[in-house]
Amino acid sequence: MRRLLPTTASAALALMLAAATGPAAAQPQGVPLMKPPIAATPPAAKTPQAQAFRTITWEALVPKDWDPFAEFKGIDLASMQDGDPRTNELMKRMRAVWDRAPVNTALVGQQVRIPGFVVPLEDTKDGIKEFLLVPYFGACVHSPPPPSNQIIHVLPQSAVKNVRSMDAVWITGTLTNEQTDSYMGAASWRLSAVGVVPYEAPKR
Image 1 (tube, one colour):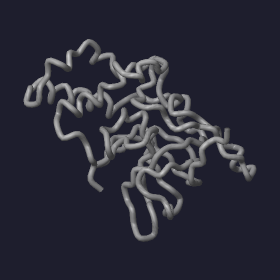
Image 2 (tube, helix red, strand yellow):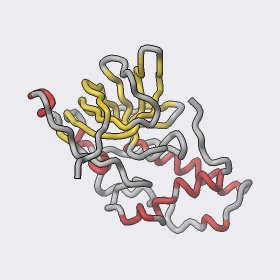
Image 3 (cartoon, helix red, strand yellow):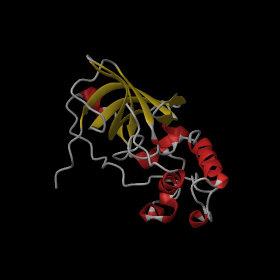
């Protein structure tokens, strides 16, 4: 799969910094989301095992005191043009920080349930054997990856069928803090999934 990213360095940098100056700036401190995450209203638990999993939001994955833009505030993007060495250097710095973003250690080892969008890493004729879960549509595919503490590397118990790139799903399993560097993005979380089911929007 090929990532469809902005064609210029300045455009990519603008997307990566959008949350610092755009609507996402209203998010609580420590929440680096560039777009609203998928709603985390859980489906009805059908078995006692399912009831043991705690439903969490994407915000919960991030330490409350972590500011993803602490090193980059006050940057004048308007003064940077394509070909400007400062633009490429800033992108490298930002990726270096975001690809090793800290996690909320209180969730390590917890059995959780969380919804998100699928970014396949290993897609076979038998189904998807490995994928990244991201909080908003297009992340890692149509736009640069979010910080690594907002990406979960998912290893299902068995290949997931009838799921495509950017489909919305619920995953359930145990969270661990293990770094994964993939061609689609870096993840600070890993989850061995005992369940992957299609996402249904909460009923109004």
